[in-house]
Each structure stands twice: as C-alpha cells, then as structure tokens.
Amino acid sequence: MKKKIAVLPGDGIGREIASGAAAVLEAAGKRFGHEFEIEYAEIGGAAIDAHGTPLPDSTLELAKNSDAVLLGAVGGPKWDNLPSAQRPERGLLAIRKELGLFANLRPIPSFQKLVQSSPLKPEIAGNVNMLIVRELTGGLYFGKPSERRGENNEVVVDTLQYTRDEIERIVVKAFEFASGRSGRLTSVDKANVLESSRMWREIVNEKAADYPNVTVDHMYVDAAAMKLISSPGQFDVIVTENLFGDILSDEASMITGSLGMLPSASLSESGFGLYEPVHGSAPDIAGQNKANPLAMILSTALMLKYSLNMREEGEAIERAVQSVLNDGYCTSDLQMEGSTVVGTDQMIELVTKRV
Ligand code: ATP
Ligand code: MG
Image (cartoon, rainbow, N blue to C red):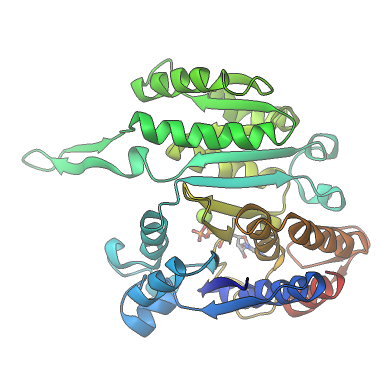
C-alpha cells in the first residue's frame, strides 16, 4: 500500500533540507519497490505569511491524513516581533498537541569521522551512543495556572502537573526502546525535592517488573547534567519529564559536536510520528546552500524505522550517510580532517545516489 508522507518545510534552512528528505524517500522507494505519496504544506513563519496563522487547518488536516510527518524547522527574525501567541514556534507546539505527540526521542550516536567536532576529548566523544526519551506534552510547560498575580503582578506562578497515565505511557515507551537496545535505562528526576518526581520514580520501579531484561537506575537531574559531560558513554536510554528533557537533550546534542547530524522523532500512543532535525531554522546561513541536510535525512530514516515498519529501508539510508562521511565529504558546519566540503544540494545528491 502506498504510504502518504506530509512534508512541512517550515522556514529558513528548513526549506532547503526538506528537499533532501523527499529525495532520499524517493531513492529508498525505488530501491525497495515502494511508492511514497509526498505532499507539502506550510507551517511556522511561511504559514503566517501565506495563511495568517502558524498552523493552518489545511496543514493539520494533511498531517492527520498522512502516515507520518516530516518537518524542517520553524522561526526566523522576520517574525520575531510578533506577540508570542502568534509566533512561528506556536505552530510547532500546536501540531504536537493536536497529534498527541507525547514522546520525543533523540538518538545520539557518535560519528567516528566527526569526533574532532566535539568539544570533548575524542576518547570520550567517540564512545557515545544514547537515546533520550523526553515527555513532551505535560509538566511545567503545560501546567495551569501559569500567570502573574498580586496587585502589581509581583507574583508569578507556573504549575508542574502530571497524571499517573501521562507518566506511565512515557515510561513504558522508554522501557520498550531500552529492551530493544542494550537494556540499560536511566530515569532522571529530582525526587529529593519534587512530588512529581517521587511519583515518576514509583512508576519507573513498578514498570521495571514487566521488563526483567532492562537494568534500571535513577539519577537526579543535576547529577545527570554533569555525567553527560564527564562520562556520556555510560548512558544507553535516558527517560525524563518535559523540562528536564528539554535541557538535557540540548546539552547532549552538543556532545558529538554535530548538531547538523541529529534527528528526532515525536510519537503518539498509536505510533504515529512527526520527524524533524534537532537543529533550528539557522537564519544565519539560510538560502546559502550551506545547511547540513543530514539531520533531516536521518530523521527520514527514523520515520521509516519507527512509524512505517521499514527497518531495512531506514538502515539503508543510515548506511548511505555513513558511507558519504567515510569518503570524506562534509558540509561546512563539520570539522573533518582532509575532507571535501560540499553544499546542501551536493550532499543530498551524494546520499541519494548511495541509497
Ligand atoms: P531554534 O530556536 O529554532 O532552536 P537556534 O537559534 O537555537 O534555533 P539553530 O537554528 O539550530 O539554533 O542554529 C544554531 C547554530 O547552528 C547556528 O549558527 C546555525 O547556523 C547552526 N546550524 C544549525 N543547524 C545547522 C545545519 N543543519 N547545518 C549547518 N549549520 C547549522
Ligand atoms: Mg534552540
């Protein structure tokens, strides 16, 4: 059956790298004998310009009627002066909420060719292979009330709320991924201070009984922040709540020094997913054919593996990316000894040819 993929390029370099996703999908389709139906729609600033809103109904409809969604990036200086409720980034928050994407996954492998790009010592950076699982639709970012109070608005309130169900579903997702990997799960919380973290810890311990092949440990978020720098190689799967996950996943994405290489997946309960690079719209290099398209291309590989049940196809794309790096090609954001620096278009072409 023909799979339908929604491609939402968004803004900035999103517009340049989205074509990379489409090209590798077509190449993978040709090689493995599938046909993908690719349909484009606007989100973010481009959607504000065209339709007056960062998430038009037509875009949401398309996403809901597709088998998976690929997204470039949103935002840019053109829309920075809009009130926060009308910004491009709202489009992203809204589509995550509308599609029920509660689990955000970021695999962070080390790329042997790129260890020089890391701010850490090569022997530390070269040893990383982790997966961060972050809760995406609950906690402090969504808690009500969130407001200013008092006569002079001198009191501010944000609310950290989770239900048992919300914690259980993310914890179960993390256990499932951990049992498919090397079987180590680190749950990150602040159970010495926060009630929500105490319930989080209880639930992780309960669920551990269902996954005897997974070894679980608990770590406070402050300790985890340190360990990510001092010994990132000790982590396999990390699971944590929304705010901690936001911070730790950005920290972790710097370890390998290759932001332009990192994909992400956001999944719903049914396994439906939205796939996007970890990086943003990079307005400083937009339109210059400099953007590294590999994070977008590797997001496409994740989509094939996680949402479309096409593991072999996804791995073929990952191998194609490795092979291009091994042959010494890279974009200007990466540091590789003796490398040939190529532009966005050429990198897309190199990878598609090898798929
Ligand atoms: P956002 O708020 O959308 O996350 P940001 O400003 O935090 O955006 P990015 O847009 O990811 O971060 O850009 C951070 C830096 O990394 C910029 O200098 C940008 O040029 C660079 N960068 C990000 N993605 C890429 C890429 N794919 N290729 C090359 N450089 C990139
Ligand atoms: Mg950012």
